[in-house]
Amino acid sequence: MFTRQQPCPSDRYWRVKRGDTLYNIAIRTATTVDKLLELNPNINPNNLRIGSLICLPPEQPCPSGIFWEVAAGDTLHEIARFNNTTVKKLLELNPNIDPNNLQIGQNICLPG
Image (cartoon, rainbow, N blue to C red; front, side, top):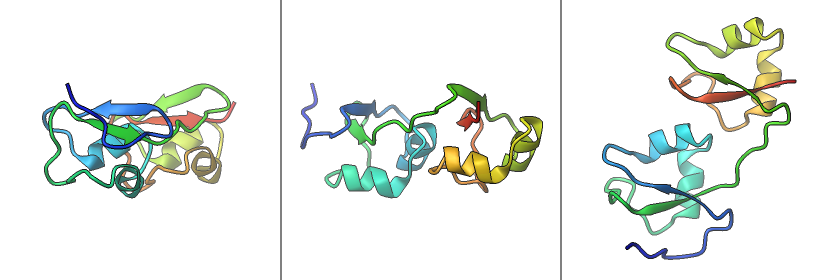
């Protein structure tokens, strides 16, 4: 069993699996590598231990509860156009995404 080094304000954790990197954890959890490092100052980002727990920031609420799952080839511009909204609105609802580096399987909050 792994012990937690310090408290996690959000009480949300990611259990490290084989192949995980801070970058792909950040993408999957809609945060940034910098935020993960801030919340987990004792981890070595180049040597994540399988099974260890990484503190995650609080979940960003999605007011509409409606999400778009990114597929191969999707761009924020195309997602906005398809959903009759703007890139600006999508970025307001998803402040932690990198519009130039969407990841397959990433969830994008859509307006209601």
